[in-house]
Image 1: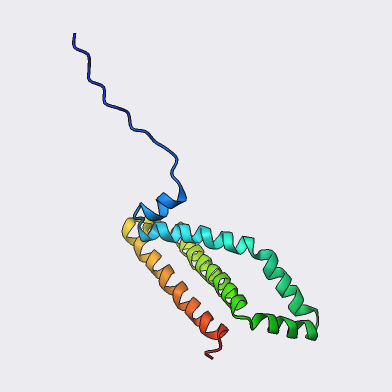
Image 2: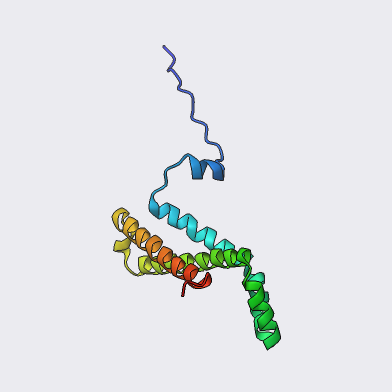
Length: 138
């Protein structure tokens, strides 16, 4: 009897974040999902910093003026802008997830792409408005 020809078995290895970000073409819904996680992690990591700033701004009038002076630094404004983006993106993506929980018709591939586009658009517009306010456009 002839022996069956064995094909080499595929090897499955752990993949790194570099492969996910650079090699794979994720759909927009996948990118929004990763962005939701990244924005949540940013907010969690910077929570002590934000609470410290909030505490310092409420202590007295003098500490509020020191806080305003601290916030006038461009680097601090950029950090606040990134945290503002994280909050706005996380909020919009969270609302999207709530709507998907209420209406399972939103979990289709087409509707997932549409709602992801809405999340990116709305959070981008709100972040641009925050940046304009933060940097003194109005």
